[in-house]
Image (cartoon, rainbow, N blue to C red; front, side):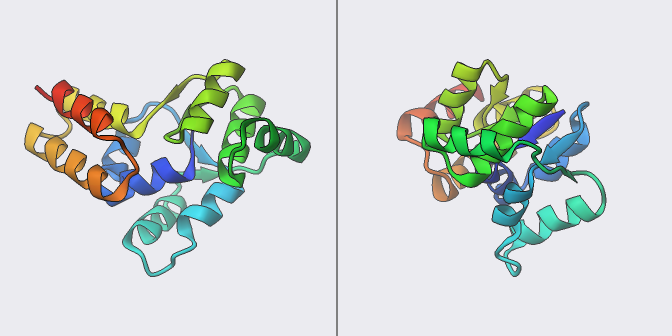
Length: 163
C-alpha cells in the first residue's frame, strides 16, 4: 500500500500526472480521512474534483486511522499538520510506504523508518518508465515551480534528472 499526504496528492493532480501515476502503481493507494478533507475541501477546484472522482471510482481508498493518540504524538513530536500526522500514523498501522513532500513529514519518515518518496521522484519515475515524454516532464517541473514550495536547487535537480 501507498499512503499519500495532501500536498503530494494535490500537486500531482495540479501538474496533471496523478491519474497516470495511480494507474501504473502496483500497490493500492490509500489516504486517511484528514488528507481526504484537505485535498477535496475546495470543491470547485480542478484538483479537488479529480481527487474526488478517483475516490468515487475506487482508484484511491479512504481509510481511518485507528490510534488517534498516535496522530497527536506525531503532530507534537514532528510539528506536522493533521493530514501529515494521519498519513504517517496510517503507514505505521498498516506497514505502507508514504508519498510525502513536506520536510517535517520526510524527517518523521526517516526517524520512524517508513519508506517514502516525493512528488519530484515520482515525476522522474514516470519519465524514466516512458509513461510521459521529456517535454511533459519538463512542463510538470515548471508547474511545480508555480504550485509547489520547492527551492531552485530541488527544481534544478529534477531538470538535471530529465537529461
